[in-house]
Every structure is written in structure tokens, then in C-alpha cells.
Image 1: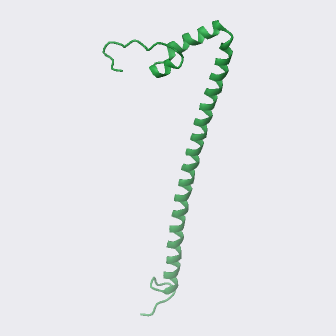
Image 2 (image 1 turned 60 degrees about the vertical axis):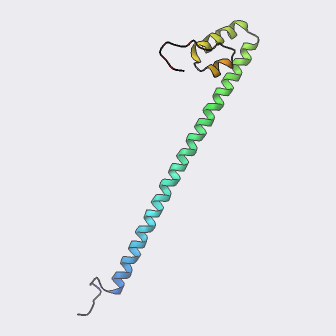
Image 3 (image 1 turned 45 degrees about the horizontal axis):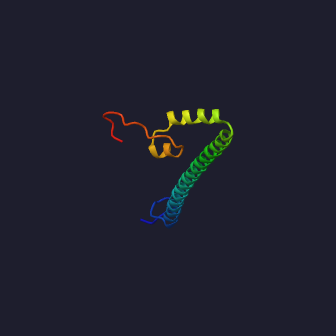
Length: 108
């Protein structure tokens, strides 16, 4: 039986099928690249947001410490707030606050 343009064994049909499969592979590669790029951009944005948040905290803290330098009552209020807020002894020592007393039954 001779092959016609409509039979699957025809070279033209096989060539078109191969082209379609190559295009599908390329499309899958491009989708993967798009997902990778989106993930990288999201990670970069999260990193920028984290850096910005840290910078805001540093600037706000710097401003507050400068404001308390010549205002003893404001400094006392700030230290009272920090005493209530800070839990880690290493953080408390930065402000010359005493370590927190150990709570019975709680491991440090």
C-alpha cells in the first residue's frame, strides 16, 4: 500500500509531528524559565523588604536613642519599655538591663 499525505507514515506528517514535539519541549522549557525567574524576583523582593525593614528599625532606634540623650525622663520611659519587651539576656545587656529572673520549670 502506498503512503498518501493523509497516512501517519508519510514523511511530511512525521516531520510536522517532530516539529510540534520540538515546539512543545521548547514551550515547556520557556515555562520552566518563567517560573524560575518569577521565583528569583520574588526572593529578591523579599530580601529588599527585609533589608528595608531592618533599615527602618535602625533609623527609628537611632532617632529614639538620640532623643533620649538629653531627656532623662524619656530615657527612663524607654528603658522601662525595653525592660518589659526584651527577653534575651544578650539583648537586655545592650541596654544595661539585668537578666530576666528564671521562671520555675522553664529551661533557658
